Amino acid sequence: MNIKKISTLLITVGLTSACSDIPDLPLGQELKPDGEDITTKNISTLLIDHLSEFYKDEAVLRDTHPKDNGCIRGTFEINQDINIAHQQGIFQPGAQYPVWMRFSNSVEEITSDHDKDFRGLAMKLTQVNVGQRLPKPGDEQQTQDFLFLGHDAFFAANPQEFFDFFDANFNGSRLAFLATHPRGAWNILTGSKVYKNPLSVKWNSVVPFALGLPDVQQDGTKVYPQVVRYALQTCQDNPGEITPSEDYLAENLAEQLKDGTGCLDFYFQFQKDPKKNPVENALFGWDEEQTPFVKVARINIPTQTFTSEAQKTFCENISFNPWHGIEEHRPLGGINRARQVVMKDISDFRLKMNGVERFEPTGEEVF
Image 1 (cartoon, rainbow, N blue to C red):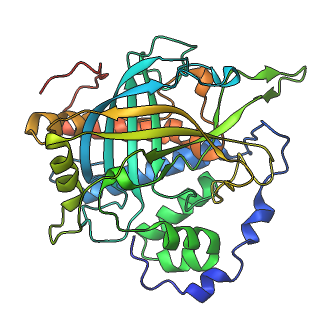
Image 2: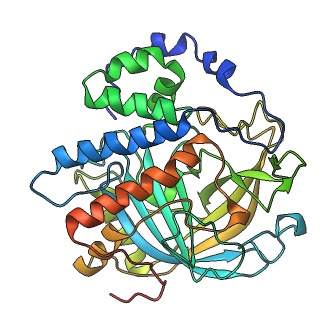
């Protein structure tokens, strides 16, 4: 995102103003506001209309994160000593799952890796045969997806702000939006960075998820005993320098994995205070001192090559959605609820326009 014209002084004024917008909810609960379904549908329409115009005569890329910085395979392995209270869903001691990981730049167009940017990481665990399957979107039966950004907070609090941001962006009024949304502007300013290697980024889910099934009260309210955010961090030093190449992130990753390996540790961060760790506002990171990260798994990344055209095509056509998964890891909050619909709509549109049949990765693909 181009942040050069953003006034730091303007951003600083009212940085905490969005705190008042956080719904006053008890621990472990979410609240869907009236009109959210309409807003979500408006997001889908807005993004699809933009893609239709932007990619008139060429293959339709993703609406955001169109440039991949490497799509690699690994093994997701749960710690043997994981706390018994955390043994929910896929998180069973010693369990292992093949995983596909797609690193990306986040902006809507293909850009140089030298540009400051929210980086992205989408993960798809395969061969998941545990837990209760989330019913929607219902197009994958043995996967569990996780999505990450290279920052601990989002640029929009909720679906309405998400719509307003892209509506302003497509209509040439991004700066006006940022001027009236100082916290989102601050997150863009501080979250847009340059890195040497995708494996060196500290990744954060920025939105919460259930850890286990809910308790259902007499009035039907669902209370989740454990709510978490996810984080990933490298468990080793990763080589790589910022070279003149516009694609140095993928090149550095390819060079590392040509003869070497990589690894990422997977963490939980628990909701302990519904105001400081909100479910319905994605603008705020959760304070690590107040709710420290707990390591529960590791992703081992073997030596590999990932630059063949066949593998690139496969990865380009993978559909990621945090609702590809099980009830024990149910996505929570407005941004996640919108993702359920919008990501499916965008994926359906892209695949149709590109003449690609939807498929579910198995983790056994060979290229």
